[in-house]
Each structure stands twice: as C-alpha cells, then as structure tokens.
Amino acid sequence: MQIRANLVTVPCPGCGSQRRVEVYPGTISPENLHIFHSYSYDVLLDGHHPIVQCTSCGLHYACPRDSWETLEQVYATGSVESYLKEAEGKLASYRNEAHFLRELCGAPGELLEIGCATGLFLRAARDVGFNVQGCEPWKEAATIAQQAFGSRVKIDTFKAADYASEHFRVVALWTVIEHVEEPAQIVRDIYSLLIPGGWLALSTPNFQSLSRRLLRSRWHLFERPHLSFFDPETISDLLRATGYKDIRIRTEWVTYSTSYLASYLAKWSAVLSRVFLELDKMFLFRQRLKLTLPNGAMHVYARKAL
Image (cartoon, rainbow, N blue to C red; front, top):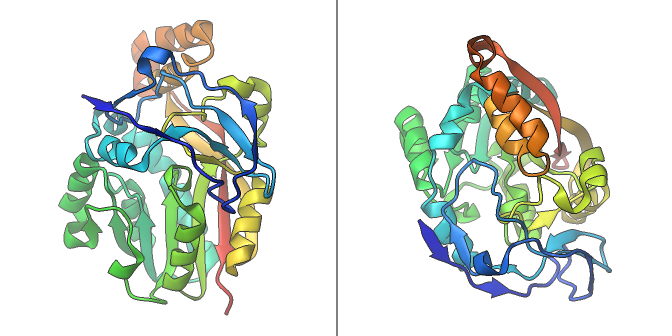
C-alpha cells in the first residue's frame, strides 16, 4: 500500500529552536519523496530525509520530513509479517533486558511498554514477575499482543491520560522515541506515571556510535520514519531537564538471523548482503545460526527522584 506523503519543516524536537545546520543531505529519490509505503519491520531502502543539527541543544533530527499525519497512516496500516520472522531473536534479546530491569528495580511491579508491537517484551517482563500493560498503534501487531494480554494492551498511540499517575515501577519504550513527534513531552508524561524511584527504560539510535561514524550518511539507522537522533549527551540533557536522576547508558546488543542481517546489510553493502544470503540458504545456518551484535543503538535508563 502506498500513502501520499506531505513534507513539513519542523523546529528542534528537543528544545523547539528553529536554528539548525544541515549535516547530511536527504537520499530519497525525487519520485519517492511524496510517496510512503506501509510500515514493516524490513529495512526501508528508499533513503532518508535531510539530517540537521540544532545549533541550540545539539540534537540531530530529520528536516524537512514527513508530516505526523502521514506517519500515523503509515504505522496504522503496517504489515507484521517480517517482524514475526525475527520473533525468536527479539525474544532472546528481550529476555536479557527483562532480567536486567528486574535487577535494576530490586523487585517487580507494574510495567508499561509504549509501542509494545506483538507483545514479545511484555512476555519476557511477565516471566520475571512484572505485571504488564502495553499500547501500540500498529494495529496488526497490537491485535497479536491482545491475544496474549487482552485488554491490558491498547490499540492506540500513547496518551498519559489513559493511565493512573505514579502507578508504574517501569515504563519502557524500545525503538520508539526516535519515532515520536515530541520526545520532550513523552518523557515528561512518563515521569508523571512513574512511582517515586521508578525507572524509564528506552532504546534509540546512538548518533555517536561507531557505526554512524563509519557509515556517515549511509548509516542503517537513518530510516525515513526516524525523526530524532540522540546521543548520550543530548538524551541525558533531555531527561535531566524533566527531573530524571541516575541516568545510565549502555550499548544495545541484538540477536539477528542471517536472513535479517542480509536485508540490513543490503542498505550499504551488496557484497556482504549476498554473503549472508548464501549462508541463509544453507540448512544448518538457516536453522541454527543467530548472531548477537551491537547495532548502533543505546539503552538508556533514568530514575524518578524518590
């Protein structure tokens, strides 16, 4: 399905400043600039909008970019087929994350995941003792999550008013904040939902990662739906401005199948992509080989003051 895309010029999503400088030009071909395909978990190969840097706060973001109305249509009509192919690897990564959060919190409690997709992380968090809830605007994915969690999963974009204040020990958003139109607002909303001492946990592309430094404008995380690109300093500044304490940052490691790595690598290396496709054709590798690698993103944890 193709969606007509409207482009907008926006202020900095972090501080609201209109002052910016271009870092990388856009790479979307002119014939695709006003067309957006339905969202899927596959790597989008149609390029990215110009990447600029705010001269006030240092945040990198896409500008001009697709309007929020366009993106809402894209997310609502996305296909879940390719996401399901990577369920095993994602679940393995989420189980490690759930155990880490259980140790970080010291005890389980109420957990909300914003952007829960098919509910894989909710499963992992429930298995270590958390009482879980989720929300997801991607209808096809959220419907699958509801089959496991019923009304505890909402098919909708996140709205703080839907949840009780100071109720959650953890609010998680994995690979979400880079998609959000107003990241400063969502971290404030999450702060209001956390119990004193509760934790925000998120993952997002790290603009200062080695992969971005090496790949530059061809970085695999410069995807068209990604609006903001944080680094450890800019995400920490955003969280401190809201009142978060004890900010911790670590490299994200993700478990991939060879077939998914092939699709990822196709964005910037046809040779490496073909190598992994050949490996995937071999029965042994297709059935057993999973690789856990750093992917250019970071995990960020921040605590609400007691």
